Length: 60
Image 1 (cartoon, helix red, strand yellow):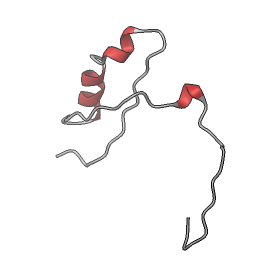
Image 2 (cartoon, rainbow, N blue to C red; image 1 turned 30 degrees about the vertical axis):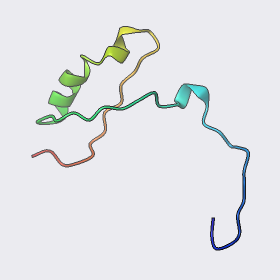
Image 3 (cartoon, rainbow, N blue to C red; image 1 turned 90 degrees about the vertical axis):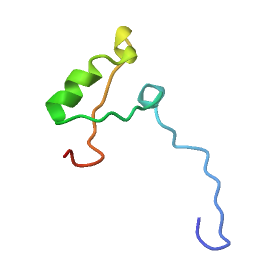
């Protein structure tokens, strides 16, 4: 939206399979440490769960 011009859009929407169900911040020493820590995530206890690791701040 810019200025007084407002636009309401009905879509496009993210596919249901791409919706984020939550997130966690973890502190890891490096990428390999983050992988090891992520293996304990409860989301991996189901066939539908997955984990995506993203660096948000340089480690160190």
